[in-house]
Length: 190
Image 1 (tube, helix red, strand yellow):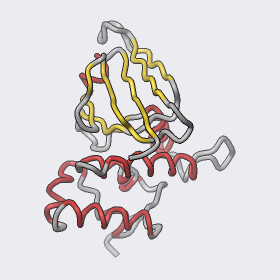
Image 2: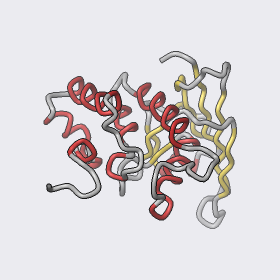
Image 3: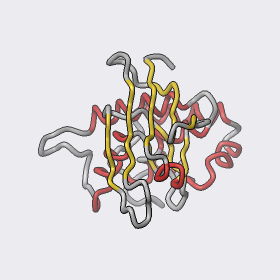
Image 4: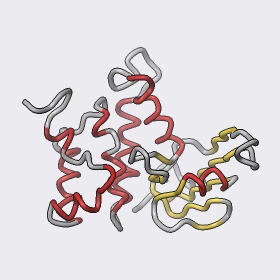
């Protein structure tokens, strides 16, 4: 009772506009991160349910925890997305599941609707080129490059946007579309 297409675990962390405030209410960063990790460890996470599909990205809001986002996103892509008739984790609801996968494979995701920042994760592809309308974006494209030294490189060592090193694990819409090149350098340990 009180929930539709989900349960308390699917909605507990669904406060995308104030993750830091939610963590404070839950007793601080450590308690928040531990409880969020438990959602994945105990199988409470539902990849096919929109309220919680951004949950892997919430770790990146806290210093020292972004590695969890990168690890979980890579695992979820491998577990739930396949080139087969059942290759999506549920009803695609006008492309929601596919969009999650595409953003995640490119290395950034809009974790909070209406927020103009994206949370970064390690890209799946070595190179992606997105064509942009030159009328609005003079560079005309965004190239995403991912430097893997070994096949196990899934953790972000450094990200540059237009040659400028980013601090943290987010990028704004303006930084992203004006970067020209978004370059990820990856390593195998966090």
